[in-house]
Image (cartoon, rainbow, N blue to C red):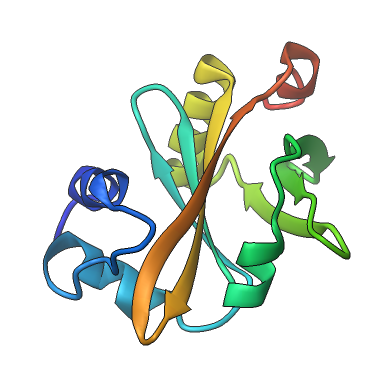
Length: 148
């Protein structure tokens, strides 16, 4: 089993036109991205990395408009919404950060301290997993203030 740092390192070295390797650290991504509209989180040194998997058509339609980020209280947790513009409709990605979950507390700490999200858009092309696009998102301090 590879640690998250190795998976993230391999992902960041990848090129959009080349499939991620099926063995080694990226095998975890192949095993876990099994359906559309799935998210995986990784704590980086300078940002929270959000890996979003969807169909080729959805990922290809995402344009260069800066994504919007909204953080709302959701019980004791917070709901994070990332909205990206597409050709026809926006795509909304959502995940919760629950303070009762140790990993979620780590992700919340990285997000609050760094104030940045690196959004990686992944899809399958001819059976291979590709990181098609990456968006850098700076989250405004007022938005981050919702995170406990």
